[in-house]
Image 1: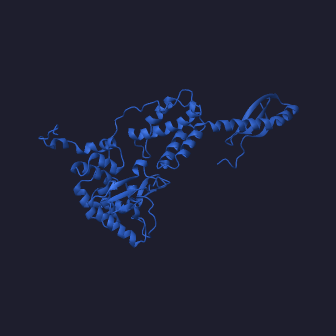
Image 2: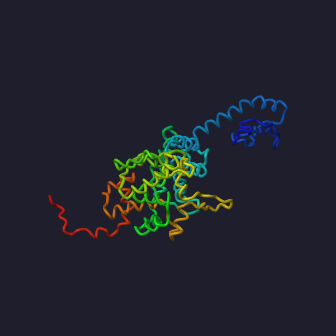
Image 3: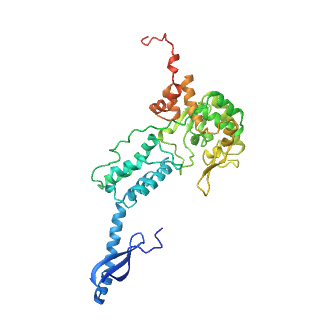
Length: 382
């Protein structure tokens, strides 16, 4: 970075437009000049060199003050406080974009609400596609957290402008979530075997997130109590084994349909002498759900593609090229709703989400189900 550069040092005393000028390195190692207003004389040159150490100390002092209270300082502090959370890698990407847009050396109090509004109006994904409002809410929460740290240090004049501002409503494109139909689930299971077969089976019968399922260990499976303990998650974006949030650390009921898939996968793990159900071929700990889906590869021209994994191959084989592995989780939710295997609060608990989130995500997939209710129900029967 700047270790090999001179910083906050006087380089020379030169003559410019009939006056003496100080040439120096600023805090970023960039050469700058400062007019002194002194005439070009030998005594004035000597005077400037005598004052050079004091000038350098003042440069260093200003740099430290600027660095200590800058937006970049609080952004880094926010990231440091989040390092042990499951969203650390996600926040790291946010902070990088925040610094780039608002300026790392900008003082928090100098960030205007109009800048914030413009930032959120123009957020896009890497492929240039716009971001939905729910995702923007997560971005807003992160930026608000950074500004809150500045507020706690009395570095804001008008309060936290981010948390005091409400994201405007927007027309988001339809969700790409498409739960598998029972026919599609059968089609997928009939066309694969081994770990891929068991991965799909466990997913649709438990509602586990893909990163939770790939992290299952022998000790998490309790056939006697018919429970699955969700204790960790292996995400390609994470630098730890945390689940998505603390609510995600939970106990999931083991439905009978999941049992044969779990037993088959445990047998596989035993053959590899591994504690991990979905261990690698050599028995080592799985990396992430990309062990199943395939790994993302970035070519020099910037085009993102995926190195084929079992799932990548399977979904094309059965004519579902745009399907995502996490649709197994959505399938569990929708089928549980439709078949009334579990009550809504039981579904939410098994999936590690709030009840309102469950309805918000999946109610649209059971439209018109109310038309089939028994009209003879007595609402006031004792």
